[in-house]
Amino acid sequence: MATDFKFPDLGEGVTEGEIKKWLVKEGDTVKQDQSIAEVETDKAVVEMPSPSAGKVLRLYHKEGDMVQVGEVLATIGAEGEAPSVTPAQAAPAIEKKRESVSVVGELPEGEVMVSSTGAITQATAGAEVQAIPAVRKLAKDLGVDITTVLGSGPGGRITEEDVRGAAFNAKPAAPRKVAKFDIYGYVDREPLRGIRRTTAKHMLESSQKVAAVTMMDDADVTELVALRERLKKEAEEQHKVKLTFLPFIVKALCMALKNHKYLNASIDEESDEILVKKYYNVGIAIAIDDGLVVPVIKMADEKEFLAIAEEIRDLVEKAQARKLDLADLKGGTFTITNYGSMGGTYGTPIVNFPECAILGLGRIRDMPWMHDGQVQVRKILPLSLTWDHRVLDGAAAAAFMGELMKYLENPEFIMALH
Image (spheres, rainbow, N blue to C red):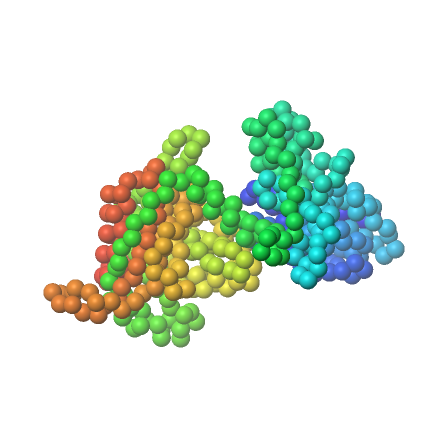
């Protein structure tokens, strides 16, 4: 009997994904648990294992299509067996292919409909409402007639935000017509998907929920630079790792956090409580081609700096290959972002909500500096700390920064733990 393989519920709030790559084609024979597709969710790229052995009778989506949890991805069956469902039955919410809006050199033949959020949709009178069961239930609970809601999701799907917006507005915003060019020339409309979409949503959520304040300072890391130079060869030969400054900074950070607990906390908005974390899981922001991911070093305070160096290396490799597990991205209590690796100096990093603080690292550079009563050329590391002013005030943040700088400027404190 043919098996309809549906996009499974992966947990962690994942409701949809994009087909990045099919690993099989119709007619192929597959084994049970063989990966048949790579799907990018708002958390990571995951491989979809076949639930049974057999022949791929039908693939219901093309690469680049968005699929909702519960939609059929493929039908697996025996030779000569027919698919048990039609494409329409398998995915009633499959979006119609969007009309291209960036055909350079050709005049547009028509216009496309754009919702108030800027999402491209097709205006189809009497079309079936495109919404997953959870969204339909929300509409019912809020007393919203879902047939009157304009969908801003892929292919005109109705999202929870659309329903909530309709509930607070007497009349949903009407779609507007836009041409495929503006007064200066043609424009491309690129779908906001995958990691880029997740990054955008997460950054907006943070800016709306966090009372963010940033302070900046400079650390004289001349001694730390010298220490790294002494240990670099050993790290490469014995541990196969290119030693950067991040492992030292992670260790110094954990030491400082233990004396400044509110930097390692979050707010429980439902109970109006500050959750002080008694563990130290440090997220490392990593830039990839289409966004930003933050894998987490668990229990960083309990690991030696060379072990942290190895873990950072492995996480960067997995991130660049889009092979991070969902577990790699969970559980962070504090985040480091190293824009100095791209040549930056200072910044105003955005807190990785629901955490309450993030540390930005600038580019280490030679600067004239007063040291031992003399002006010398020293190695200076720019630091930018953003924190949630709801959780702590400037005095506490400054005290934390002072202690962190003490460890970075005197790395013997870090090495004393090993």
